[in-house]
Image (tube, rainbow, N blue to C red; front, top):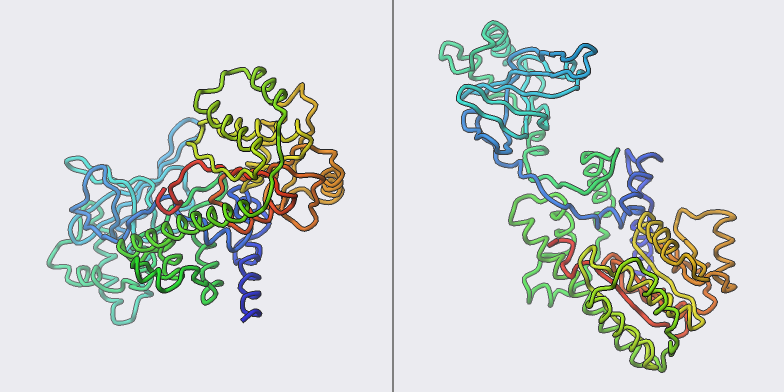
Length: 477
């Protein structure tokens, strides 16, 4: 049992570079999204979905709708050039089905001339522009969905292509072309159609990383962890609340087989996220209530000086929250507080004030965030905010290597840095704090209870502050 657990943890902790199609360049792009491991990837939930499962006939396409349909290429792709230096090219393709015809338009994609051939069937998904006499789809997703021609259908195919080449401006509904009509209904690769005509996930991405690359990586990672997804919720709780199992939910949050499956997956994962958050807070409260005395941060002159130096006035809500935090840190008990506020509500300045209060009272403060990019942003903004104050700020992320890492670890250990900002790197065994007095985790829903507890255990009863932008689970956001 223990060996199976270690194997599972090993797979989850594996870098995404082990996946097919993820080289050094793409791995760096995924890191921008905070995705380093297989576990990060399978928990990177879609931000939206495209329902490509409902196929519509061309005749029934409506203006301004986004729709999925099957069309047969009835003409060679035509390319038009605009501008003296041909800065703009438009690629136009004529397609049809057994109800009507349409034009498909792309911009500056000349390579498409080598892809489409008359007589081939394609799945299209895109935005429809319809007038009284024309149907146009711009920049659609497309996928070839026909099998190689079987010998007994060669006659039908020949009839169709001959007809299409001679009658490009007509759609296929002529009774005399029986072969052509049969061809419309034959030779669709049903397996390929299933792959594209379904509900597709849409992920938050970054420049250079396409939806297709992310989807393929997620799909590969799900294959890798198949059979290793352990359910953290007991069967009794799942049964009581009618929740799907974890493996089913992870599969269907990424690639739902239908809308009901997606709804069940979101319900399960949202329940689990809130359940574990509440459980973690209860554990924290129990641990620190039984943990004895906390550090008394009695001094507050430096924090008041910082408040006065800010180029803006704190809101009443910010002042109230910091006052409550200050009273907790002066109570003689261990603070264990959660601060929730929307993005842009000013949580960061509250965190900085808390960190400065720790430094003012002779202790180090640590701020742990989920991604390297966010850590660097906080490092820059906090460094700028504390200009003119004799406070040393350090940065420790997974990107800090070699001599630079050795140096910052020594500074943390010797107390030569007052505020440490970083990622999961802050809880590595190699990190030894001189006298940590306050630990803050930002976007706390991105960290497990164990990770937050490990950071707090780096010192002797440090105060705990966790911050979140929203109480809504990622699966419901």
